[in-house]
Image (cartoon, rainbow, N blue to C red; front, side, top):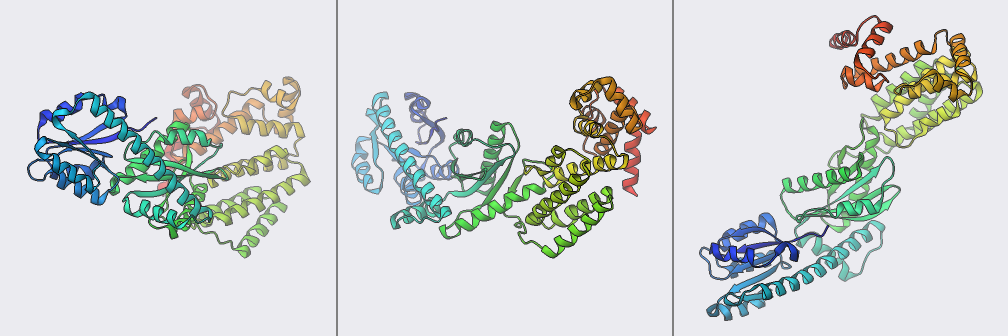
Length: 504
């Protein structure tokens, strides 16, 4: 989507401004009139608010004339384009103004559709070339700083001018998807920004896409609103939650690499979020990258002992306590990841010796996209399945059946589905399941669903009708009937009991 060039009209006569607005097809020519002023003083105030790229102004006006206003604007923003509207008796004044950096003027009595269109097309071409050159220059400056390849001396000057003299607010915005992202898609979505902000894709590395975000409005509110809208637009366009980190602002080149590194580190904090898609503002404390190897050794020794004792429930509780009370509060990212790697290795080794569960079930713990909470949820299910298989000395087929139920309880699964999964007839699957598990397939499925429903209700995040759907029931009434049959109380009574327990 092409951006329109923003225009401010300044004239003390209402009829002149209205004539200008209707004289040409501004939108069709690539322009957008963003504001109007009746004198130079008001024009300056509106310029600071809207930052138009083109100013069309009369010369003689009350309070402050057009030349004084233009001089003020160009002293702060020399790349703004100004068109002076002049009468015959102001012609010499307008020509003298060309030395101030004002490059265009029109005689009022000669303004028509043809000559105004011709001038606007010329200005559009000039601004487009200047903007493209400016964009490439700053992207090369920033990319060179990040990659450690310093540009030439002249390039350094232009970079400093871009960051400091242009008085825009710059920051890095980093995106990382759980399912992979497309650079082309992100670039296309980023091109849809309004006139006051822009976002250029600088690089992609290890699934992290880095944008250089610019807010041309200097207020804090405008900056935070602009970057939040940009992120929301990207998320909506992708149709999925993505992890996002917004860096501190870029103020000087010598700090760019450190700011980027901090943003990358902060993006890693997303592994400790309960839900994907949260924005991490890098003003917060950075994550801890130190690893306490002695503490990790003691932790793993404890887990190894518990596994040897086949105390899987306690093993899970030790892991949960370590992650929730140590790793997450202290933002110990590398400690968590190393602990997770070693833990999976111990579980894989233990399962390999006893053949309790399928290797595919162990592999589910290895997903790098899981948050810490997601990993704990998978680990809890895994240790529960391991305890069940160990306690009953189940056959391979029944272990596979149990695993299938635990992975698909939220769907409308049947005994026939389980039989197909383990490669036997439905009748044989039902008999085998009842023999080894001590309950029928239907009873076991109901109990598994109710146990999961208890967890969801206990969290307080879902209503009863939501939990019924999340645990595989088509109607809330049927879910409530099954829940009461298994537990002796209704879901509502269960929630009341849990709330009272938490208040104690």
